[in-house]
Image (cartoon, rainbow, N blue to C red):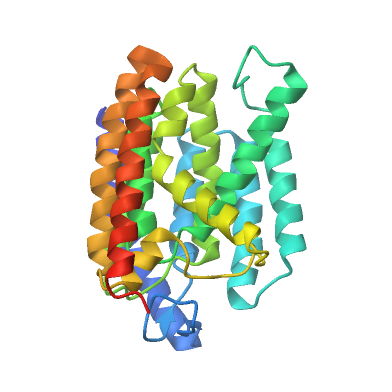
Amino acid sequence: MTLAIVVFAISTPLSFLAVAAVLRWLRRKQILDHPNERSSHSRPTPRGGGLAITPLLLIGLLGLGLHPAVIGGAAALFLLSWRDDRGSLPASVRLALQLAAVAVGLFFLPPILPGLPFWADRLLAGFAWLWFVNLYNFMDGIDGITGIETISLAIGLALLGGSLPQSALLAGVMLGFLGLNWHPAKIFLGDSGSVPLGYLLGWMLLSLAGQGHQAAALILPAYYLADATLTLVKRALRFEPIWQAHRQHLYQQAVRGGASHAQVSLLILFCNAMLIATAWLSAKVGWAGLPAAVLITAALLIRLGELGRRQSP
């Protein structure tokens, strides 16, 4: 506990200062995210907060005992994603490296569903991890949302038996980032932050499942899983290119309907607090906690949909 407190107390201001320094550099280099028809912001904003937070996380998590293979996979995704932030790379290139990073990490994961044959377990875990990497990137579309989600997951992981110092580092680094990313954001995370975060958190959630908490590993990120997956399915059914940026997630529709970025992010925080409690309960009652999580998530999706219909263009 003492180490976790120290890690949190150091990482929060260090992250804020690192993000502030990167922000100045991005402005000087004019590395900006310009508004377009798929954006949820209205003015050019520096993109590349991952340049500050990802190295802090990788160095800190390595020192706190996260497996070096996972650190290496996240570092490779960080470098590729920073290149993508500066100029779009083909989806095939991004997917190939993500597959490679996930494949390496799978060698060091415990069985997720011990009743399955090993090959089926690895296939399921790999697919889930790859999807989580991408959905974490897809869902990073308004101010504050990724910081809120990451801190929520870090708290949940800490309560359910994950490494307390590692969770404290995640929470501290993202809280420092939120100081400059809260609405109206002065800096965006970019793929160099969201993609490695999805990879690292995917590993931690799968590790939690490997400890016997499969239900909790599904419940903690339930809102992100639901909004991203439902949106992907709807776009696929309409034969729209699923890899292209858009504003069709329910949280984006809520902002388009007139809700502020802060209001939507706080709604997600409130939902996540209930999901954390439900996940903690599921550690005692198993899959019996899942229906409550479904109801909580459905209520948030419905509320976001209502907000999106208020003034939706």
